[in-house]
Length: 392
Image 1 (tube, one colour):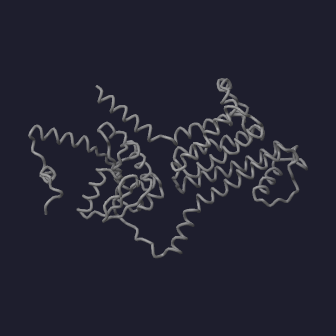
Image 2 (tube, one colour):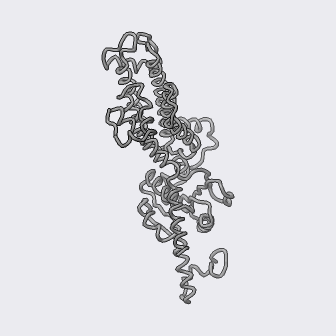
Image 3 (cartoon, one colour):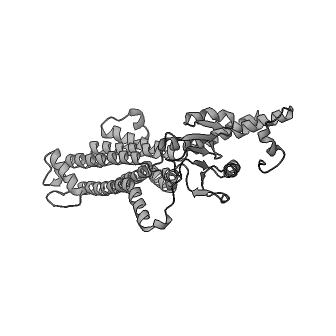
């Protein structure tokens, strides 16, 4: 009974580690954004109003008007969705929005639990920055478009709601949109200027968030392409022939090491991805060090031309995430994932793994066959006799 309990606790621990810390951070950020949407649209939830901390967070950005607060809340929700997928652009957007929220709280002298909670969330994002390294073109473009639309709407509705505090007053939404474009483009015609401290703070927030959103969007979408072109121009001698029809082996444990040796013995072309936390693998094949769930690392390993990916890590949750990312980058690649036990096989199948192999389950069955005297296949005789490889 105790071993079964320990196994269950271990499975829960692996499941939690696979979701930590990006999912809790995304949930908290999404909650803050949802509350800002509710209060910005004048739809407060009575149950949430009773919680002082949540009530304070929801009113953090109320200085710029209800509609603008709702738009910023929408941007926080979008950033939270991106954090679930560990996107680097979503991390940058979340940090910027939280910085604005913290600044508004400090300017309004709202010293309370809401300020502390947002400060802790802000620090946590910086501490776990290396967990948000995914870069996908489709997700980056989509998030960039949503963020640009949101910042334009934020500037337009915010300036219109504060129209009386500008000199001259802003008469309509068209003029508010014009003021937003002029502000974000840093042209500075000076025909419309903020006349009160609240309006000046709003314009500062529009500039900081808007310019950061545009810069992050350009960097996330065009950055990899520009970096690749610069490497091609300035480092032509370091260009490598891209592997094709090969196997990508992920992992550096005992199973991964033995699999690498067997693939080399059989002459199967493969690329191994390691995290660098353990001793480097033996030479004779290409090794890439990095996060195997990062799109850039898998693309460097040639995921688009690979015929199979073997997720041979020791963590079931990480193997499942590798399967999801690999299938997202190349739906036609064959996915083989290792499972710590037979109970995990079905879950890895749900993670789009084509084949799932449990060494522990297979090994225990072979042991039972040896105990009962059942003849083992000749393919395994060299292993049973302690020889390092099959004889020719």
